Length: 122
Length: 106
Image (cartoon, rainbow over all chains, first blue to last red):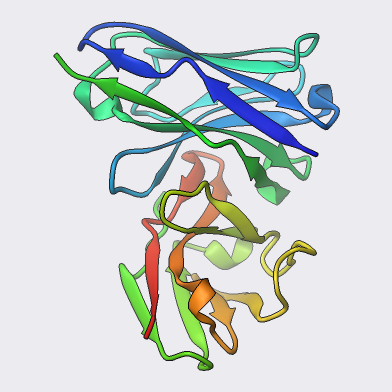
């Protein structure tokens, strides 16, 4: 069974840092791009960051560029999101998602993890 | 790049629900659709415009034309009540989601 399990969420003060992790299992992790998508309470989905299989291509949403860093360890089947200079508007449920389909424009997201909650508040 | 969806759509049980997603030249891109029920993670229902994962009922379909793509749910059931999001890749904005549409079955 393909499974993605996020961890690392919690309460952090504005300006603080947090590192999210996603443990993947049930598939050949090293052959799939991975993404982070977030959802603020009561709001829609917002894509955050994407990393290719060999880390050659990394993308960030404008809202997090320069503050967040995505990384992956194919040996450990994991993908991380280092979040610095956190703001109240970063408060959200963060999902780890597998990207399927090869080239970006042909791809889709499946499956999604259960999410880990990040709350930025003083 | 932006994808626009209506905030809400209502449909009677057994009828056909249509959810539109619009964006510039969206018909030239591949679109995916996700279903999200309260308290649950999103679930893929359509990919590459009109392909359906095997676990998704046949009543889910999609089509695209010009600047719009349409998710169609035929014979809508109460269990289809959920939020639906469209998604596409743009070379400048990267991955983009629509704002989501709340489907109410009443």
